Length: 190
Image (cartoon, rainbow, N blue to C red; front, side, top):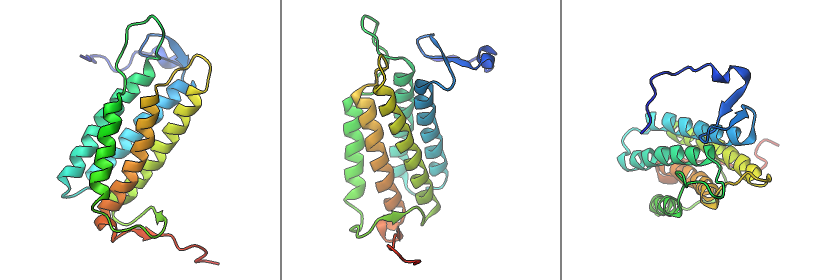
């Protein structure tokens, strides 16, 4: 259980922050950037949920995703170390559930005949914004995983990869199941 009685501690005033393990790192550290960008993704999804209207199934999916993103942030905030007790980690089952949600939404969409521009309904536009933040988080996580002694679980990276796909499909679902998509017209303004 998390108890937050005091919000400011002043311990970050020196430009460092504590990982979940207690280790202090500079606030510009790649691991801090990774879980911070996961948090940005979560916040963008929160904005999406304000604009959904009547889409209780999609809202429930997004609520589960927001909780998963806190799990993922906790996973990144405590690097796996040999000989240490295991902490909260993203699981393959969470990735599989996300894939199932993608399939559920995608089965209801109009056929895609072009690339889609971010837009249409407000919720769809915000879903595209969340997707791009998610992709940035994934890139940072992959870069972090390539560093020596900076483990990132395969499931965590897979989750973010799948999440960006989910957010794309959800944007089309929100755009009247694809009928309201704004399609790219190559060379339209030449």
